[in-house]
Length: 333
Image (cartoon, rainbow, N blue to C red; front, side, top):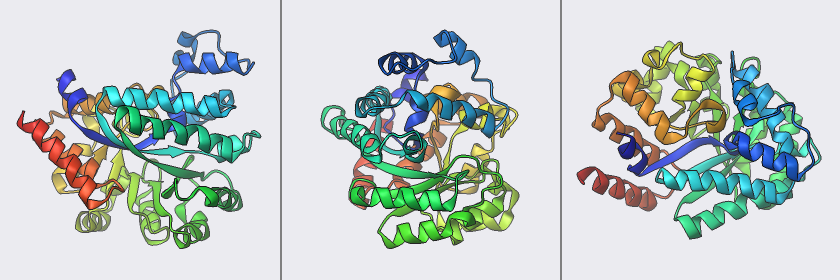
Protein backbone atom coordinates (compact mmCIF):
# COMPACT_ATOMS: atom_id res chain seq x y z
CA UNK A 1 0.00 0.00 0.00
CA UNK A 2 2.98 2.32 0.40
CA UNK A 3 3.23 2.74 -3.36
CA UNK A 4 -0.52 3.35 -3.65
CA UNK A 5 -0.48 6.19 -1.13
CA UNK A 6 2.51 7.85 -2.80
CA UNK A 7 1.22 7.48 -6.34
CA UNK A 8 -2.42 8.47 -5.93
CA UNK A 9 -2.88 12.08 -7.18
CA UNK A 10 -3.76 14.32 -4.27
CA UNK A 11 -4.01 17.89 -3.01
CA UNK A 12 -2.63 19.27 0.26
CA UNK A 13 -4.61 22.08 1.87
CA UNK A 14 -3.15 22.31 5.38
CA UNK A 15 0.61 22.67 5.29
CA UNK A 16 2.58 25.24 7.28
CA UNK A 17 5.73 25.82 5.27
CA UNK A 18 7.71 26.63 8.42
CA UNK A 19 6.56 23.28 9.80
CA UNK A 20 8.29 21.47 6.93
CA UNK A 21 11.70 22.57 8.21
CA UNK A 22 13.52 19.27 8.65
CA UNK A 23 16.26 19.09 11.33
CA UNK A 24 18.94 18.52 8.68
CA UNK A 25 18.03 21.78 6.95
CA UNK A 26 17.76 23.54 10.30
CA UNK A 27 21.44 22.82 10.90
CA UNK A 28 22.40 23.86 7.36
CA UNK A 29 20.62 27.21 7.68
CA UNK A 30 21.91 27.79 11.21
CA UNK A 31 25.46 27.31 9.93
CA UNK A 32 24.81 29.55 6.92
CA UNK A 33 23.47 32.34 9.11
CA UNK A 34 25.83 31.89 12.08
CA UNK A 35 23.05 30.96 14.48
CA UNK A 36 23.77 28.80 17.52
CA UNK A 37 21.10 26.15 17.99
CA UNK A 38 20.37 24.70 21.45
CA UNK A 39 20.87 21.21 19.99
CA UNK A 40 24.05 19.33 19.12
CA UNK A 41 22.64 16.93 16.54
CA UNK A 42 19.71 16.02 14.33
CA UNK A 43 18.93 13.18 16.74
CA UNK A 44 18.78 15.59 19.66
CA UNK A 45 16.29 17.80 17.80
CA UNK A 46 14.07 14.85 16.95
CA UNK A 47 14.22 13.69 20.58
CA UNK A 48 12.78 17.07 21.57
CA UNK A 49 9.66 16.42 19.44
CA UNK A 50 7.78 14.99 22.41
CA UNK A 51 4.82 17.32 22.69
CA UNK A 52 2.15 17.30 25.39
CA UNK A 53 -0.19 19.75 23.65
CA UNK A 54 -0.38 22.43 20.97
CA UNK A 55 1.51 25.02 23.02
CA UNK A 56 4.47 22.75 23.75
CA UNK A 57 4.80 22.19 20.01
CA UNK A 58 4.48 25.89 19.18
CA UNK A 59 7.28 26.80 21.56
CA UNK A 60 9.67 24.60 19.58
CA UNK A 61 8.14 25.60 16.24
CA UNK A 62 8.83 29.30 16.78
CA UNK A 63 12.33 28.57 18.05
CA UNK A 64 13.06 26.68 14.83
CA UNK A 65 12.05 29.71 12.77
CA UNK A 66 15.11 31.60 13.97
CA UNK A 67 17.31 30.01 11.30
CA UNK A 68 15.18 31.52 8.50
CA UNK A 69 16.83 34.83 7.71
CA UNK A 70 17.23 35.44 3.96
CA UNK A 71 15.22 35.10 0.78
CA UNK A 72 17.36 32.10 -0.14
CA UNK A 73 16.49 30.42 3.17
CA UNK A 74 12.77 30.70 2.46
CA UNK A 75 13.32 29.53 -1.10
CA UNK A 76 15.31 26.48 0.04
CA UNK A 77 12.69 25.61 2.66
CA UNK A 78 9.83 25.81 0.17
CA UNK A 79 11.66 24.04 -2.63
CA UNK A 80 12.48 21.14 -0.31
CA UNK A 81 8.79 20.74 0.54
CA UNK A 82 7.72 20.93 -3.11
CA UNK A 83 10.22 18.23 -4.04
CA UNK A 84 8.81 16.02 -1.29
CA UNK A 85 5.29 16.79 -2.45
CA UNK A 86 6.24 15.88 -6.01
CA UNK A 87 7.64 12.54 -4.83
CA UNK A 88 4.24 11.84 -3.24
CA UNK A 89 2.32 13.01 -6.34
CA UNK A 90 0.76 16.05 -4.70
CA UNK A 91 -0.74 17.80 -7.71
CA UNK A 92 -1.84 20.98 -5.95
CA UNK A 93 -0.84 22.56 -2.62
CA UNK A 94 -2.29 25.48 -0.69
CA UNK A 95 0.44 26.55 1.68
CA UNK A 96 0.30 28.57 4.90
CA UNK A 97 3.04 30.97 5.94
CA UNK A 98 3.39 33.02 9.15
CA UNK A 99 4.89 36.42 8.28
CA UNK A 100 4.47 37.80 11.81
CA UNK A 101 6.82 35.10 13.06
CA UNK A 102 9.50 36.58 10.82
CA UNK A 103 8.81 40.33 10.73
CA UNK A 104 8.92 40.29 14.54
CA UNK A 105 12.54 39.10 14.17
CA UNK A 106 13.45 41.87 11.75
CA UNK A 107 13.00 39.84 8.55
CA UNK A 108 10.99 41.85 6.02
CA UNK A 109 7.67 40.68 4.58
CA UNK A 110 9.17 41.06 1.11
CA UNK A 111 12.08 38.73 1.96
CA UNK A 112 9.72 36.03 3.22
CA UNK A 113 7.29 36.32 0.33
CA UNK A 114 9.87 36.48 -2.44
CA UNK A 115 11.68 33.36 -1.29
CA UNK A 116 8.54 31.27 -0.87
CA UNK A 117 6.81 32.50 -4.01
CA UNK A 118 9.86 32.00 -6.21
CA UNK A 119 10.05 28.36 -5.16
CA UNK A 120 6.34 27.86 -5.82
CA UNK A 121 6.68 29.32 -9.30
CA UNK A 122 9.64 27.10 -10.11
CA UNK A 123 7.77 24.07 -8.77
CA UNK A 124 4.96 24.84 -11.20
CA UNK A 125 7.40 24.98 -14.10
CA UNK A 126 9.73 22.12 -13.17
CA UNK A 127 7.54 19.75 -11.12
CA UNK A 128 4.09 20.54 -12.57
CA UNK A 129 2.59 21.23 -9.13
CA UNK A 130 0.13 24.11 -8.90
CA UNK A 131 -0.07 26.02 -5.62
CA UNK A 132 -1.58 28.93 -3.75
CA UNK A 133 -0.12 30.86 -0.83
CA UNK A 134 -2.20 31.61 2.30
CA UNK A 135 -1.12 34.21 4.86
CA UNK A 136 -1.91 33.08 8.40
CA UNK A 137 -2.36 35.49 11.28
CA UNK A 138 -0.89 34.38 14.63
CA UNK A 139 -3.85 34.31 16.98
CA UNK A 140 -1.75 34.53 20.15
CA UNK A 141 -0.76 38.03 19.01
CA UNK A 142 -3.08 41.04 18.96
CA UNK A 143 -5.66 41.86 16.34
CA UNK A 144 -3.67 45.05 15.72
CA UNK A 145 -0.62 42.97 14.82
CA UNK A 146 -2.75 40.91 12.43
CA UNK A 147 -4.09 44.06 10.80
CA UNK A 148 -0.53 45.27 10.31
CA UNK A 149 0.37 41.98 8.63
CA UNK A 150 -2.65 42.33 6.37
CA UNK A 151 -1.57 45.83 5.35
CA UNK A 152 1.90 44.50 4.54
CA UNK A 153 0.32 41.84 2.33
CA UNK A 154 -1.78 44.20 0.22
CA UNK A 155 0.93 44.92 -2.38
CA UNK A 156 1.21 41.14 -2.92
CA UNK A 157 -2.45 40.18 -2.89
CA UNK A 158 -2.38 39.03 -6.51
CA UNK A 159 -0.09 36.22 -5.30
CA UNK A 160 -1.81 35.55 -1.95
CA UNK A 161 -5.44 34.62 -2.65
CA UNK A 162 -6.43 33.84 0.95
CA UNK A 163 -5.72 34.56 4.61
CA UNK A 164 -6.07 32.23 7.58
CA UNK A 165 -5.73 32.02 11.35
CA UNK A 166 -3.38 29.70 13.24
CA UNK A 167 -1.27 29.32 16.41
CA UNK A 168 -2.54 28.94 19.99
CA UNK A 169 -6.28 28.28 19.74
CA UNK A 170 -7.56 28.08 23.32
CA UNK A 171 -8.27 31.56 24.66
CA UNK A 172 -7.95 33.16 21.23
CA UNK A 173 -11.38 32.79 19.58
CA UNK A 174 -11.97 33.73 15.94
CA UNK A 175 -14.13 36.65 17.11
CA UNK A 176 -10.93 38.36 18.27
CA UNK A 177 -10.05 38.87 14.59
CA UNK A 178 -13.43 39.72 13.08
CA UNK A 179 -12.44 43.23 11.96
CA UNK A 180 -9.23 41.92 10.39
CA UNK A 181 -11.14 39.32 8.39
CA UNK A 182 -13.80 41.88 7.42
CA UNK A 183 -11.02 44.02 5.99
CA UNK A 184 -9.43 41.02 4.26
CA UNK A 185 -12.68 40.08 2.53
CA UNK A 186 -13.19 43.71 1.48
CA UNK A 187 -9.76 43.55 -0.17
CA UNK A 188 -10.76 40.41 -2.05
CA UNK A 189 -9.06 37.72 0.02
CA UNK A 190 -10.69 34.35 0.58
CA UNK A 191 -10.64 33.22 4.22
CA UNK A 192 -9.94 30.05 6.19
CA UNK A 193 -9.27 29.49 9.89
CA UNK A 194 -7.97 26.91 12.32
CA UNK A 195 -10.83 26.00 14.65
CA UNK A 196 -12.00 22.99 16.61
CA UNK A 197 -8.57 21.42 17.11
CA UNK A 198 -8.17 22.07 20.84
CA UNK A 199 -10.84 24.77 20.90
CA UNK A 200 -14.58 24.07 21.26
CA UNK A 201 -17.20 23.77 18.49
CA UNK A 202 -18.19 27.38 19.24
CA UNK A 203 -14.93 28.45 17.62
CA UNK A 204 -15.97 26.68 14.41
CA UNK A 205 -19.29 28.53 14.45
CA UNK A 206 -17.43 31.83 14.96
CA UNK A 207 -15.09 31.10 12.06
CA UNK A 208 -18.08 30.46 9.81
CA UNK A 209 -20.39 33.23 10.98
CA UNK A 210 -17.91 35.98 11.87
CA UNK A 211 -14.91 35.33 9.61
CA UNK A 212 -16.81 34.06 6.57
CA UNK A 213 -14.44 31.15 5.99
CA UNK A 214 -14.52 28.88 2.96
CA UNK A 215 -13.19 25.94 4.96
CA UNK A 216 -12.17 24.95 8.49
CA UNK A 217 -8.63 23.84 9.29
CA UNK A 218 -8.79 20.84 11.65
CA UNK A 219 -12.41 21.05 12.84
CA UNK A 220 -12.45 17.61 14.48
CA UNK A 221 -14.27 18.93 17.57
CA UNK A 222 -17.36 19.49 15.41
CA UNK A 223 -18.37 15.99 16.51
CA UNK A 224 -19.41 17.50 19.87
CA UNK A 225 -22.18 19.66 18.32
CA UNK A 226 -24.96 17.84 16.41
CA UNK A 227 -26.32 21.07 14.89
CA UNK A 228 -22.86 22.01 13.68
CA UNK A 229 -22.46 18.59 12.11
CA UNK A 230 -25.74 19.03 10.26
CA UNK A 231 -24.67 22.45 9.03
CA UNK A 232 -21.25 21.27 7.85
CA UNK A 233 -22.85 18.37 5.98
CA UNK A 234 -25.53 20.56 4.40
CA UNK A 235 -23.12 23.31 3.31
CA UNK A 236 -20.24 20.89 2.56
CA UNK A 237 -17.78 23.20 4.28
CA UNK A 238 -14.47 21.31 4.04
CA UNK A 239 -12.40 20.26 7.05
CA UNK A 240 -8.63 20.03 6.51
CA UNK A 241 -7.84 17.26 8.98
CA UNK A 242 -4.26 16.38 10.00
CA UNK A 243 -4.27 12.91 11.61
CA UNK A 244 -0.60 12.54 12.63
CA UNK A 245 -0.65 16.06 14.07
CA UNK A 246 -3.78 15.23 16.09
CA UNK A 247 -2.08 12.21 17.63
CA UNK A 248 1.24 13.93 18.25
CA UNK A 249 -0.54 16.81 20.02
CA UNK A 250 -2.79 14.47 22.02
CA UNK A 251 -6.06 15.61 20.44
CA UNK A 252 -6.80 11.86 20.25
CA UNK A 253 -5.22 9.17 22.41
CA UNK A 254 -4.40 6.98 19.41
CA UNK A 255 -5.00 6.81 15.68
CA UNK A 256 -7.53 4.04 16.28
CA UNK A 257 -9.63 6.60 18.20
CA UNK A 258 -9.45 9.31 15.51
CA UNK A 259 -12.86 10.40 14.24
CA UNK A 260 -11.99 11.05 10.58
CA UNK A 261 -13.62 7.82 9.38
CA UNK A 262 -16.74 8.65 11.38
CA UNK A 263 -16.88 12.15 9.88
CA UNK A 264 -16.35 10.78 6.39
CA UNK A 265 -19.14 8.21 6.78
CA UNK A 266 -21.49 10.94 8.05
CA UNK A 267 -21.02 12.84 4.79
CA UNK A 268 -18.70 15.66 5.80
CA UNK A 269 -16.18 16.95 3.28
CA UNK A 270 -13.08 15.84 5.19
CA UNK A 271 -9.58 15.92 3.70
CA UNK A 272 -6.21 14.55 4.83
CA UNK A 273 -3.17 16.80 5.24
CA UNK A 274 0.19 16.89 7.03
CA UNK A 275 0.10 20.20 8.99
CA UNK A 276 3.75 20.42 10.16
CA UNK A 277 5.27 17.23 8.70
CA UNK A 278 8.80 17.67 10.02
CA UNK A 279 7.53 17.82 13.59
CA UNK A 280 4.71 15.28 13.37
CA UNK A 281 6.41 12.41 11.56
CA UNK A 282 4.95 12.33 8.10
CA UNK A 283 3.82 14.05 4.93
CA UNK A 284 0.41 13.55 3.33
CA UNK A 285 1.05 10.01 2.03
CA UNK A 286 2.16 8.88 5.50
CA UNK A 287 -0.99 10.41 6.99
CA UNK A 288 -3.15 8.48 4.54
CA UNK A 289 -1.27 5.28 5.25
CA UNK A 290 -1.58 5.69 9.02
CA UNK A 291 -5.34 6.21 9.00
CA UNK A 292 -5.86 3.37 6.52
CA UNK A 293 -4.00 1.01 8.82
CA UNK A 294 -5.55 2.16 12.10
CA UNK A 295 -9.13 2.66 10.91
CA UNK A 296 -9.35 -0.10 8.30
CA UNK A 297 -10.23 2.30 5.48
CA UNK A 298 -11.18 0.89 2.11
CA UNK A 299 -9.71 2.12 -1.14
CA UNK A 300 -13.06 3.79 -1.77
CA UNK A 301 -12.63 5.69 1.51
CA UNK A 302 -9.19 6.85 0.39
CA UNK A 303 -10.62 7.85 -2.98
CA UNK A 304 -13.33 9.94 -1.28
CA UNK A 305 -10.79 11.67 0.96
CA UNK A 306 -8.52 12.52 -1.96
CA UNK A 307 -11.41 13.61 -4.19
CA UNK A 308 -12.58 15.84 -1.35
CA UNK A 309 -9.11 17.42 -1.25
CA UNK A 310 -9.45 18.53 -4.88
CA UNK A 311 -13.02 19.70 -4.45
CA UNK A 312 -12.02 21.75 -1.40
CA UNK A 313 -9.24 23.67 -3.20
CA UNK A 314 -9.47 27.25 -4.43
CA UNK A 315 -8.91 26.04 -7.99
CA UNK A 316 -11.46 26.88 -10.67
CA UNK A 317 -14.23 24.37 -11.38
CA UNK A 318 -12.47 23.41 -14.61
CA UNK A 319 -9.14 22.88 -12.87
CA UNK A 320 -10.79 20.82 -10.13
CA UNK A 321 -12.41 18.58 -12.72
CA UNK A 322 -9.09 18.10 -14.51
CA UNK A 323 -7.49 16.89 -11.27
CA UNK A 324 -10.43 14.67 -10.39
CA UNK A 325 -10.34 13.11 -13.87
CA UNK A 326 -6.66 12.39 -13.29
CA UNK A 327 -7.59 10.75 -9.99
CA UNK A 328 -10.34 8.67 -11.60
CA UNK A 329 -7.95 7.44 -14.29
CA UNK A 330 -5.44 6.44 -11.63
CA UNK A 331 -8.08 4.47 -9.71
CA UNK A 332 -9.12 2.62 -12.87
CA UNK A 333 -5.51 1.56 -13.41
